[in-house]
Length: 611
Image (cartoon, rainbow, N blue to C red; front, top):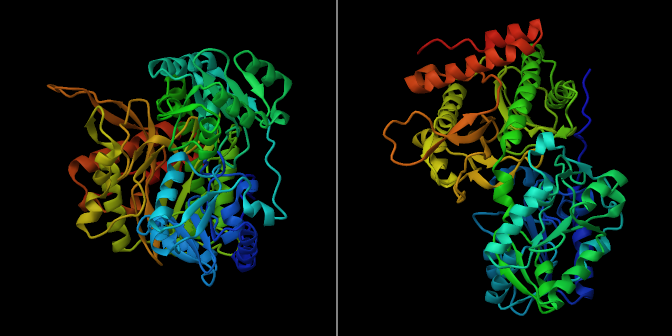
């Protein structure tokens, strides 16, 4: 009945091959005079999601998550993953080959200081580490009395004999209806920044920034419509876009040539050398730019000015067209999600639904909009204990039939030309336990606290993060992920600099779109997460306010499972927010649904009895 066009359920990696692959890597390192090697998850663009040709960490270790790093020494191998992936890593990775460490509790730099033997030569690829990251690695090696050695070619590539070819998806224009600003105007804003800090050229190393700046999109990376390309923007003169020319058709090529010189990938290193020899003052973001780029400039006589990429905050603050597109995408997506929930409620009660079937059904409802370009990340569909794995990805091996008494956690999103969506709903199958309802309601209270927050202009996400945790903390509970992340406009579902998290230091500015997604996970039993996207807006109706305040507008529209709410735990204000939200969902989505789905929605959004 349903099928997935955008997500595979096959095991993408094979942890059983890790022993032989690590052995081969050690032999390769020996021939190069290296005692170890650092293997990050990223590609040369520092992407979260990478094309198959750059899945080096997954190929070596068997770990398929989106964040991690491995260190291979002569006598030991270690994989670092954060709290989202601890369970997944232990299931995917051969524990006889790799020790698994917590990326935050025992970070790689601390591990290097304690475990790398004196006089060791630890290799790394300067294309796969940022300027700051490489400096931290070198410092840690020095404190261990070892040496960090840059390699020109990655030793993993020498032993990965069946490595896929790089992607060749075509570059397409992002229409002005959705972009809301011409590439020429965006370039003018960037040049103003360069004039202000008296630098000659900006290196644009993030393909999300490149794609936004030139109003282009691509299909090089799964679920994120970016073009894998670098760019340079001079204060005066024409920008240069470095891309595989096989991706450039005549029409998009002509459009780009109006504002920039389009150059082949092979020209990038030569042009970096030229910038150095011309003694240009080049600005780059040390937290995002590969160290190799800085090396080419500095070693050839140029100067590097460190500074945050000015495009990042520009891209994060959505303009009127992008906000209008986001609202349209959320409405469309909410209809699809609600149609799914109505179907799921009937089918799951009959014991007919597996995790894979649910993923396929939801994607099918989204595709029926006629406007879905892709999903925005691999759908997380966890029933019962699988829901407690924060970034669980169902495979044919792990696929679980959803049973009565299960909680079902579904975290998903869509990519539409007018907006990117991300929504999580936790659904009861059968009658939930009192404990489930209590914990769900504690998560809901945190979600409402963020949704109702009013905060001074300039407030960071770190200052708001505890709003979502306070009710769980009082019960001795917590969750091991951020409360929210930025979301792009037909770009990455995870976008900086804004986020609601303990380390979210960037100010939240009007026009930013973020997720609001507190959760709770009881290992081996169930997971709970409630996620809506919110827009930072000006706070209205604050008589006597002595400075500028902001608030959140909730964009996502889909019902929250009332069967999991314990009304006795909600305050009157929380109850009012919940009832108004459910009514808004009902009134907004109802006209777009067929008779059966509309009837389900009306029943699903009836306010719970007051406790």
